[in-house]
Image (cartoon, rainbow, N blue to C red; front, side):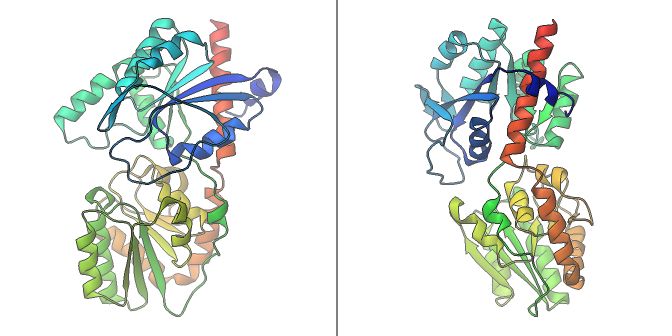
Length: 382
């Protein structure tokens, strides 16, 4: 979108943006901070609920420099309904109204209202259909996506893989842009680049201990690796229903496996300092912040292309290794590679950090400014 940046530079006005969120999230905090500091953007953030059930982190920070308004309404489990959003849609004309989470009643209400008013709006979300096996969920997803697919000005989604999915869904009628989850990299960039150690290669996993994250594959690959290579270890950070599987691996290899459990969100940068290679065998992930964090920390990453961050950031056999989702053999071979070629870890790590630094909150704010300028220019030509 380089040529369109001239549009942003030539216009003297600020673009006004509204962003509707179900709940305040660390996944958006970095981008919102950068947008609030952008000379061409004026951001209002509207939040439906203080906290929704199902959140996997305990994030207690308040909003930063960006303007935030909490909407009155009701929340039931993971869903929220805030009729007040109708008044907001009607009272002010934003250059772009960004609506998160198409499955939320408040989001559907906002999308419907904005469409009736003819206002420009964008849907932002992760790649849809990550769990295609439920017929009921597929039907509900199709119904929830009906308005966005026919009335949204564009989609602004988490990563290139999600953008590709929406481009297909849009059938060429409108654009899908990629702005993934972005955050301040400074703490992770302070981690030292790894160099070969006498203790061998230390692998790390950080995330929920659930089936979708591939904990069964991780444990099976590590088990096989430990039986054939003495110079390897594994640290697992996180908690969840798959933890007994990890504890069983630790029982079998007490000197090779460390289980740290849940680590608070603010302390997550510390977990990357003592390992060499990050392993993320998730079967599917809309983005996967841990991949981005590990690469910023100077670690090569083993992951699959069904993880959004891996699709954007990992260059196979350049700064990490890619494996098929659920493939025990491929994850074992990838881990064995870094065990047998531990001298290559520093080079892989430097390349990983360099790639991770391309996606920053400041970059995301500039991308958003460009997207709004394109939509505004296109509307002016009609």
